[in-house]
Image 1 (tube, rainbow, N blue to C red):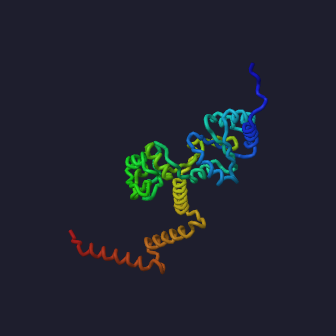
Image 2 (image 1 turned 90 degrees about the vertical axis):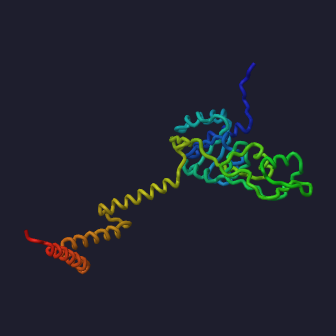
Image 3 (image 1 turned 180 degrees about the vertical axis):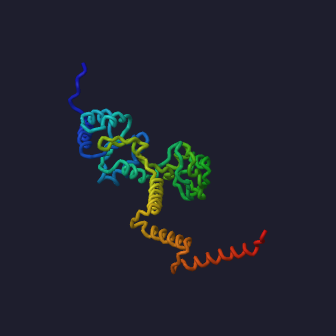
Length: 288
């Protein structure tokens, strides 16, 4: 006969209690899907962000049960996303800033078969410390030149078995792992984030900093141009507006023949040119 459980493992009990307290303590709850992230990527992030972010690895059933008891706006939508291996992050910083920090803190990882090389993978000439045997075939297939010396495999000269952007096959990934070469740059990104009732989707959390910087620069330049055209004086544009007004005043002075110390030379040059033009026409004039 089935009996209801009255005791649960200590770890699950602690997780349950944590997940009832943390959503009330912090403004932001963010979600990471761990099926796309290696555990070794999380450790340095925990250390770097320990004062600002709490990382909680969860079991989806326990998390769903705990969070369903918490009265926080928008939490229901987050609960629906808790499928498979997940990790929750709790913080008071904005979701956009958090995702940006995670993206900046990338680490180099050992390769798996099918991974894309993030760099040109250079295998330096050295003593590998590996005994001769079947491994020689793997080096040969990877086109890494070797020799046997003092009972170990030596790489005889620097080589590049795979270049940036190329696929790393399973055998080469295993070989690079034995040589302690990490050719894959990996980062962590948020799947979603909940901030004071507002749920951000993954694509809404990605910011192109350079594009935004360019947009601000363009908007600033357009605002300056508009203010100059409208003669709306600000500390940033006052010198340009005065320069434009001075130039306009000189143009009006020259066009109207109103002499000033600044425009008399241009007016006289203009009058001289007009007189020469008129004289030339008079010279060529022949009465009918």
